[in-house]
Length: 151
Image (cartoon, rainbow, N blue to C red):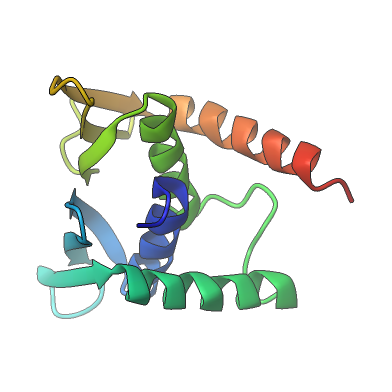
């Protein structure tokens, strides 16, 4: 299976294309099951998706084509893809196995994301991550990439 940052970024890119505003992503060994509410007509448009590794790789490939051809916002642009990539990096940094990500369970005023993951010892974690914390993760990811691939 793909690493969480890559897989979640591709899923985020696809969800953006569907106008997702609220979502829940459940991960298991072979697929990601997604339920999302979209801002596209009709109101209350609830969609369900199943993303396999093959589908995610296709979305990722198309996203790379858009980014390299200049057809997609890059360089600090906040997109659902970059937000989900940061959440995937968070879970990897914690050495966890992703179980669930949602954005509609914000406990406070600031936008937040709920991430559930398990550790290899069986312990289960539920973390609420603020938008500002995600921004810090994104900056670290961009810095790491620029160090790995200098221009």
